[in-house]
Image (cartoon, rainbow, N blue to C red; front, top):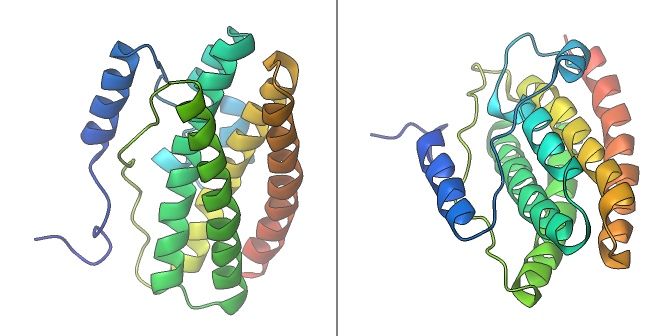
Length: 201
């Protein structure tokens, strides 16, 4: 039987299987891990799917240009955003601090819109949109706010790094505009989350 915290989250194997199916259709998006630099920046001492969205995907994206890059970026960022939505949903359901819950609502509003935009691009490009969800680490009892902030910091850093690659490798004005929006919004949120995390007892 699923516990409350497990509700709504598929296991990591299903997510990986979905990526393999996409790769077979010409839409490859390798698994994502946190690189050493991000690990040293993260306040979390453990590794988790939330903190593991950087090195492999960055290496893959850096090797691509033009439309091939745009497709891979939209697929990777859609999956990345979906994980943020899952974490934000858990914060809304079980978090206690109103400032952190408000931040989770902002994540859901902003990233849901961006997912819609990227899925529309993928449809236009006749490319597969990612499906399924990554498994999340589970917060300790009474620590959901800390868990959300801790996981979102490296997660946001991964999105910022992916977006910086987009500014160099994409030939699409729309993709570059979205990348700039992600960099600006998530860098601002990173600063907020660091402040709030430092204030938590």
